[in-house]
Each structure stands twice: as structure tokens, then as C-alpha cells.
Length: 572
Image (cartoon, rainbow, N blue to C red; front, side, top):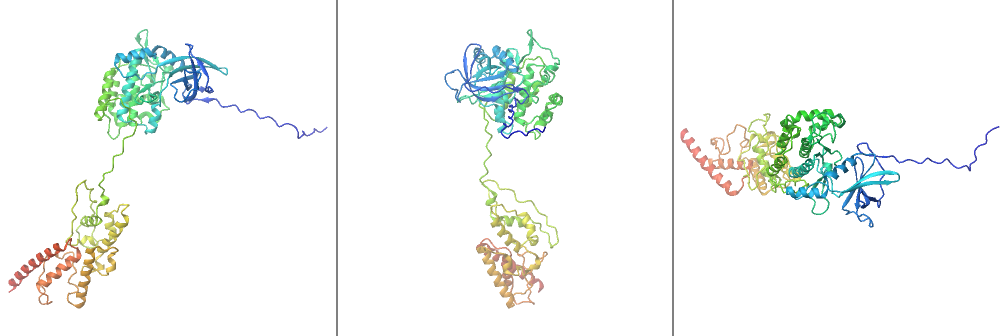
């Protein structure tokens, strides 16, 4: 018997509920679901705390704002935070036990008073306990609230810090490490993300070392632990900063100082030499061991240009000289960093400056303001004085930038250099126009190109066509030259001047020399011949002023008259 088809009124199959993927931290540990705001927790001292919104997520748990006023909602200015982790995670348990021994407020206050410090960057323990929510058991710890962590600032600053800020932070961390070491503990994980700035106005220059989840004792029964390998704790901490001792599972006070030294080095140079292969702990360990035995080599790799900040070399050399069980000389380490700050020209006042330095103001004098005509004349002078059209022109570098308050005199060419007859392309390589002056420079170069055209386009020392000079915007001096050129061309057409009397070769004498007068070929007197020579010379290079031209004309006339008379008398 055939089966009947299902009726259309049957209900559709129900969709299976999609389960939320569990939250996983960056280090792979599973994180519990977040607790709702307003949840009230009770610590071991029977004090109640109210949760606010979550403000941070760590490798093992979450951080919430908190207030001891449970009757009011927690606002954004809450003075406390609560660090919460599931009971299955272990670091918070270790951290709570550490704070119960080292982080009490009265202990910190006593240390500050004894050492005469303005503050100590050690967090104060406020309470701890257990809490259950939706069948999941949590462990929590209450602490003072802090500001932004240093890693976020580094990310904004391009992974580096100013020397004064880096060394000031180092001095504050040394104070905390000395305090922690006095209770026979080490931190073992100093890094930028575990350094938090103070919260609120007036605490901007305070920094606190947090996250003692890897803290451990370096002594056993009152004696320092032996230097031996422990594979269970090998490579603990953050791989790029962990000490050589920690790479084999051994922990000591010198390891904390070494970790701090690696942080200072990275804050100054941006990248450590072994950061190219952080996935291989053995490689990192070998690189650290090799370079810490040769500090100058380490400095050359971190600062390849040789700009090694003062103090960092001495700091690391001291670390390399320490023995495993040595007590660090904290005062000496702080003094090294303090001298480094002073050597850089700053005061060790503890101020933390994270703003990058200002870009130097551009010099108010700019070579762009240099006159275009001056650039053209300098370009002409920079060309070689070779003769002939096919000779190579040796180009000299462009003139150097002028210093503030000094002016370079404009050089005037009294005679045209033969090399100036090269094509405009050769000269345009020497004269490079600035972007904003491009229209003006283009006109100047075009005029100069016509003036320095090949010899084939010249007759009697002038361009054959007046339009070839490209005078789109002539100056008064250029107009005067044009007028004199037209007058000379008119005299030439009337037969007063020989057509080949003005053309000069590369071997002709200079313009201020008067040749023997052509008594048999022309009716011109010596004075008229000199006048014509002066006019031809003036046409090649305009004089700066009328008085200068008149003086030069008188000088040439006197020289010509004296020379010509001497020659005639010798002939007679």
C-alpha cells in the first residue's frame, strides 16, 4: 500500500539552537562568560563590592570597574577594579597569595617612608574572595584603579619612547623591584603591558607594576635557590624579554633586572635583534646568551647608525657582570639611568613625557626667494670655458644654499663664454626650478635658451630674428639692448659697418682689446672703431647701470687710442 504524502499543515522542523563559541584568551586559555553589571560580590573580610562594566581582558580573566557603595550604580569614575578568573585558572590564586604577603597598604607606606620616596609603584591589595554565578565558581581580587597601560602608548608612539621617559620609567620600576625582592619574591614578567599609569588628575607621572601572576620566591629555607635547569618553568614569561636564567627555568633577582634592561633597550631602539623568530624559544635563548657576552655587538645591532643613548650600554654591562645569586645594586642602577637623562640634557624630575618631539621649524630663509636672473648667471658661470660646439661641457654642482643673513653678490659677465652657446637642455639640467616658481623660471630659461643658442643662428653677435629671443615680458635693460641692436642692424644695411666685423670666434681676443685699425679698408677713425667695439660688447651683456657703461667706454677709448698711436709710430 503506497505511503501517503505528508499534509501541508505539518509543522516545519525546529532549528537547533546555535551554541555560542567559548571565549578564548590570546594565550589559549578559556575564559568564562562575562558577569552582568550590578552583580554584588562579598570578599573574605565580609565587605561587599558592586561590579560595573568590563574595562579589560587578560590572559586568564576579566577586569571590571567596582565600587564599595553597593546601593548605587558604578559610574565611569569608580576608584576600584576587580580582577575575576574562574577557579580552574591558577595565576590569580598565585597573585592573591603574593599580595597577601607583600601588597598590604601599611607595608607599602612604611617602605615609602623609610626610603624617602614620593610614591611607590606597587599596587595595594584591597580584598579577595570567591563568587558563584550560573553554576560557575569564580575567584576575584579587588585593587585600586589605574590608567592606561604603557603598551597602548607605545603602539601610538611607533614602539619607541623618548630617552627621558624610558629611563624615568626604569627608575620607578627599580624601586618596585627592590621592594618586591626585599620580601624574597621576583616579578619575572616586567613589560609595557604590565606597567599602568596613575588614574585621575595629579597621577599622570605615576606608574605601577602590576600582574604578579608569575611571581615566585627565589629563596628556599632562607637560602638562595641553586642555579639549575627546571624544564617545567623553562621559557616562562614574555619570550622577547625573559631572562637567560628563565629560559632554563631558573629564577633570580638578576633575572628581573635583565628583563627590565631588555625593555629599556626596546623602548629606545624599537626592535630587539632576536624578535625575528620569537616562535623558537631556543633560538631566542641562544641569541641572548651570545649578545649579552658581547654588549658592543648588541649595541651595534640595535643602533646600526651609531647613535647609542648614553646609559643603556653601562646598564646592560652591569647586568652581564652579575652572578646568579648577587643582590642588585639598585642605587647604582638608578644612578646610571639618572646620568643618562642628564647627559641627554634633561632633568631627572620624574615627569613622563609621551608626546613626540616637535619637528624643527623650517628656516625662514628659502633659496626659492633667490632672483631668477641670479640663478641664470650662476648657471652660465658654472659651465666650462671650452671652445667648439662638439666639446663636452663639464657641469659643476649647483650653488650651495645661502646662510641666513648673508647675500651672494650677483656676478655679471662682461663677455659671453663660448660654452654658453650650448643648447638649452644642457643649461636646464643645471637650473632646476622650484615647484611654486615654475611659471617664472620657465620664462627665464626660455629667454636664456634663445640667448645661448648655437652659433649657426647668430650673425654679428646677435640673434638673426628678434622673436627668437623669447622676450615675453622684457625688462627695461632688455628693451635698451633691442633698440641698440636694431640701430646697429640699420647701420650695417646702410654699409657703415662691415657685415663680418662683429662676429667673434672662440679664439678672438677679449672685447676690451682694440685690434689694429683697418686704415686701408675703412674710413673709420680709431675712436669710431672703439665706439663700435664698445657697442658690440654692450650688446652681448647688458650693463647694470648707465654710469658703469660710460666709465667702461672711456677706459676702452683711452686704451685704444694709446695702443693705436704706438702701433702707427712703430710702422713709420
